[in-house]
Length: 86
Image (cartoon, rainbow, N blue to C red):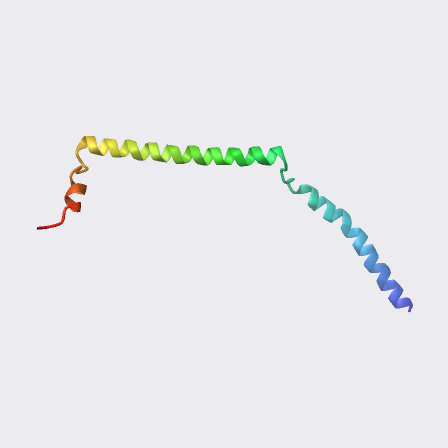
């Protein structure tokens, strides 16, 4: 019976000793934003994604216009492909 009490006491001491380490680790984690902060973060992320998408589209349109100006794209090629051969 005495051995059982010693083991229980050792387990309790180990648990109490581990509590500060667990609390220190938990305090290092960044808090999860909630409410208005979370909504602002989501809106900022969506806005930046929309800005990047608009930038890519603008760059593609500028590249296409430049290619057409230089004569690299054949405007009539699409119309010729749609007509069935005779």
